[in-house]
Amino acid sequence: MERLRVGVIGLGEIGGAHCASIATLPQAALVAVADLRSDVAAKVAATYGAKAYATADELLAHPDLDAVIIALPDHLHRAAAEAAAAAGKAMLVEKPLAVDAEDARAIVRAADAAKVFLMVGFTVRYFPQYLRARQAVESGELGTIVSAFARRVNVVTQTDRIAGRVGVLHFLGVHDFDALRWVMGDEVASVHCVSATSAPLAHNVEHETFTTLTFKKGAIACVQAGWYLPTTHPAGFDFRLDLTGRDGSLNLSMMEQGIAIHGRSGTSYPYMASPLIAEDRDFVDRVLAGAPSPITGADGLAAGAIVDAALESIATGRVIQL
Ligand SMILES: NC(=O)c1ccc[n+]([C@@H]2O[C@H](COP(=O)([O-])OP(=O)(O)OC[C@H]3O[C@@H](n4cnc5c(N)ncnc54)[C@H](O)[C@@H]3O)[C@@H](O)[C@H]2O)c1
Image 1 (cartoon, rainbow, N blue to C red):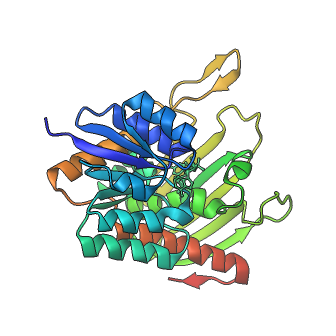
Image 2: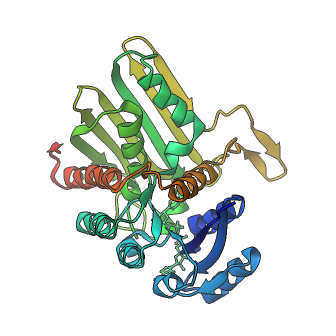
């Protein structure tokens, strides 16, 4: 079987998970990993039989490398993606494509110019529950969609982990901005966002937001993105999607997947599917098959534009037209 030789750049929370995910795929081989933290790179490399590097540029010079997963902090995506494109490597870039719109456009330009495969890591599209919601809309089961409510809330310790690198809209909101475009099969026309100020956290970014979206076909949506869940919260996340259509409604809760485990260290609500493995499998299979990207640079730009509009709306109090 032909195997795609993959390198992972950035071995933090999600980069480490991508390594474990790629290692489960018989059609892929994790050949190289890179992180500035040399101890982490060496340990991950030893775990998977890969070669350890410090930087993206060093990893991209690895012989016999076909594709890379860029899991660096958001503001570093552009330089690594441009280098990967120049090296002719297929790439999966973690969400958001970039923090800055010009950086995001530069990534798309570089991939287009080099004619390399570019996929954006909007993992929510690979949760079976969200896929089913999309099918319910696409099949007409719910009738014309009138409104949607999406919640993506994390535990409060996430703010110190991200340390003001980006706010909650880039970290969490962008997932639902993309998912709603995809589930509803529609584009956002206008954006209004408010941000709570009652209990500020240490980092000077938005922490709790309600973003109201109007869609081109007339539906409305509200996205709650926040990270104020207490550390005692049994799941550490609260992700929901409610859809109301002319002929039906849909309620999705990621906590209610049919299993709760009450163990020595408390209650947990485990995921019943691994969306990251499904995402990485789709990336690998499509690159091997020469198939088009399922989540394009244009998708990354569209979701990023909604984040930018929401931030502008918080700053000005205005409704922003896209
Ligand atoms: N798809 C998802 O569900 C999901 C989940 C979490 C994070 N993310 C995204 O993944 C990206 C990474 O987030 P994270 O939470 O894993 O971050 P992280 O801080 O946990 O990890 C980043 C890693 O990059 C390394 N690094 C930093 N600068 C480097 C450089 N110049 N060269 C090499 N290595 C360098 C750090 O040492 C660290 O190990 C972000 O864009 C984030 O939004 C996506």
